Amino acid sequence: MRIALGFLSGLVFGLGLVISGMANPAKVLNFLDFTGSWDPSLAFVMGGAMVTAFIGYRLVWRRSAPVLETRFDLPTNSRTDRSLILGAALFGTGWGIGGFCPGPAWTALPLMAPGTLVFLPAMLAGLWIGTRVKSLDLLASKGATQ
Image (tube, rainbow, N blue to C red; front, side):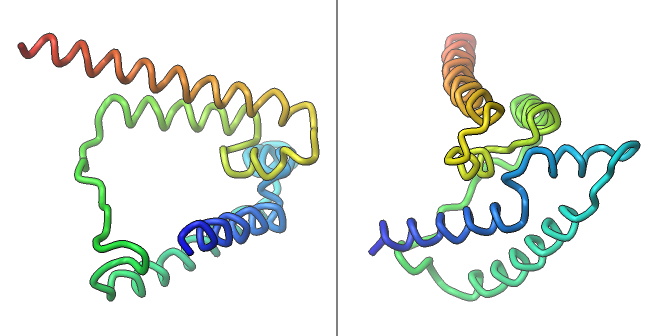
């Protein structure tokens, strides 16, 4: 049941990305181009997502636990640290250069566009490198405290 619901959630999310135009990097780049051919339509997509998330969270928090888990798994770190700022800057830079963020990049893969075929491997390499750097950072900080 868990796999089926996960698949269904991913399918709805992916379809939403494709229908909204978020899988089209040209549309995303036009949204970011305020001085050129600015396309404000993605602001409506983001606004719709915020309203949906707002309502969804209000409904979910009324429950004592998620449907398929015994408890909510919430992050405990609420600090704004170097890793968060660097990650956000890298994400924003990649989104601005490539016109993709991770979800839409995967939904655009079946189109086999050259930009997608370059962006996805670069994104995966960046994720892999980021994991290695973070683990080295953790090892270095543990060594410094001992």
